[in-house]
Length: 91
Image (cartoon, rainbow, N blue to C red; front, side, top):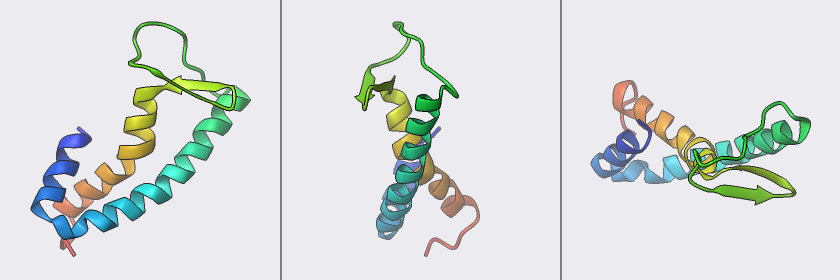
């Protein structure tokens, strides 16, 4: 899971919220540029169909809404949440 560890860590250690936001913003930029570049160069594509929740259309490129939400927005923050829980000193 992505969302559950992130929410539990934020509720247990609310002072870490700003750390999650900064890490999330940094990696959002990197993964967004990577996603747009990969779609533009044809490294991958997402076929039309009903298996996606919705679509994000940017600059003539189209990718699933769940790709945006989970991979671009939440993945880095959830990774930091797991790290804080299992290995770090929660500071």
